[in-house]
Image (cartoon, rainbow, N blue to C red; front, top):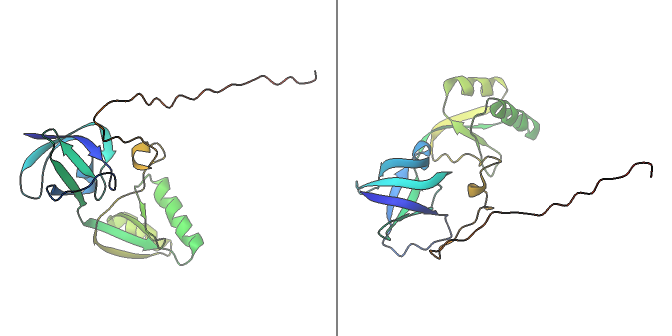
Length: 177
């Protein structure tokens, strides 16, 4: 079985026209190791060093040198927008308080996975909710360096030591001296 062992973030690799696509929902895109199929029906094993959220246009490098380009699959979502910026901020707080993954759209709309109970709560807070199918890419968490642009990415095919070690020097302050 083909094995995808390295992720290349969108924009960091060039599709020379030979890459196949794999259309995946969020659950399939947020894994470390999982048997999947590309859009031609060919199986492959996603076998990454750690779990990441694959995003639209990311490339998966196969052990044989081939590439698979990720396409985000539409899935049932709900888009909510408050009647004011403050109302939308309250929606975000309530959704975050429930530890729900959300995606913030450019117009301030908050997208979350379709869920009748959550949709009713959000409507009860005065928001307008629209349910439809669309790709869902929630915001990267505070500790998800691989999806924030801070993580290191190399295509050179060799290893580096990137431990992000920083020297910190602290001196004790003397009080009353």
